[in-house]
Amino acid sequence: MVQLSLVVLGLIASGVQGAPLNKRIAQSISAATAKWEQACIAAGGAQKCNPISVTAFSTLLAAPGPCEQQNSADQMIDLAKQLGNDAEMIRLTQIFVQQPRNTPTSQSVPYCQQAPKNAELNGLFQCQFAGANPTVFVGGVAVGQPGTIPFGKNALLSPPGSCPANPNGPVTDGVQLVDITQNPGAGGAGNGNAGGNTPPPATTTAAPAPPASTATVAPPASSAPANTGANGFKVQNGKDAQALNAKFITLNANSACTAGEQACVNGAFAQCVNGKFVTTQCSSPLTCFALPLVNTPGTSITCTTEGDAAARIAASGATGGVTGSDGVVAPATPGPPPSNAPATPAAPAAPAPAGGDFKLQNGKDAQALNAKFATLTENSPCNSGEQACVGTGFAQCVNGKFIVSSCGATLTCAALPLVNTPGTSIACTTTADAAARIQATGATGGVTGAGV
View 1 (cartoon, rainbow, N blue to C red):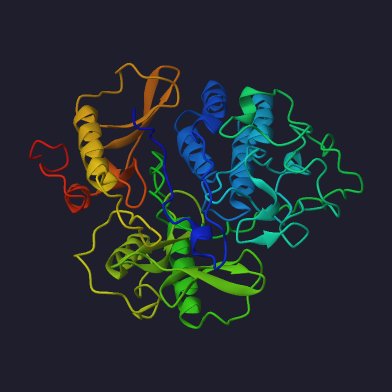
View 2: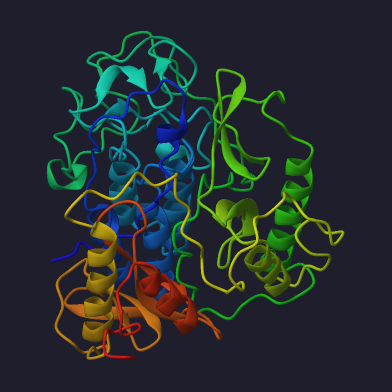
């Protein structure tokens, strides 16, 4: 069965010069927050739970920045506090924030270098998977360099790859921390790292979430009414995206940057490594833009079309195009008519393997899933953590029942083929965009394979 997870295709490390491309270490990301979501629903969180859960488990993918997992954990704690300081939600969040992240290169994943908003997360950081190289971090950064020691500590972890919830070492590849421990080790104890400093107190004002390194599929829109007032976060998100795009115009590969910083440089996705931007080209005909998030404050960075970026910013209520002055961020290669679908960012694709084109199979697999989704209802039997499209909405199975989140007024949920790796993803997009993506794989018969 095709594993349904929101997969980021832009593997940043694959674009880093000199970085070895070894095996990919991954996991079933939706399992990382499934128990938290169940606890959230039990605590009365209702429709607020799923969007936060989806956003959170998506941060375990290879591309999001080093602090996005912690930022999502802060959102999870915030909701727990709104629901009467629910202790189970807080405990499960403390475990989630320590879940190892995917690594596309078998290298260790950098640690966040800022304090969390909520004190409940102080001293907590992700474990590494056992298959990750403990001496080299993503981007070819040697252990001991910035980002390779958890925030608030001044010595290397001992043993390497450990975390407070799993103090004896790294976690077996693909295993969920929540399945092997009930003790989050909160308070910074248990990782055997002598000389660690206590992180400074969390600030009382939450800073805007840092831009995501790339967007996969947009998180399903919340079912809560949108804030359309003058000060609604959607408008501010649009303005923030415009400001970033205007800034990105001024950048080049030699622009000064801070370790871990992400941006668009000359139309390519860029990440700061050792004080210099390392770029990953967007696959033709896409280019890099900052986009507004839909149902939470903040922005993301993705490979998409100029038309799509402009449409998403306009939908937030912000005026003035992608930069706020009807300007263009980066020269874009002419491409197909823009859609409202989240574009799938991808590193330049390797040649298709002889005798077995996975792209065509991806298209057929997406068609099969869409045909299956057409038969589902909210009451269809499902397995916990399973994801699907029900009606036009994105759905996740909780306690044997699908919880459906709306894709918004103009979008619909569809399975899409991945571009440069075997598999599929689920996205809120348009029917025309889904059909075009499937057709591009060589599969015929439309979205479902039956001409529909």
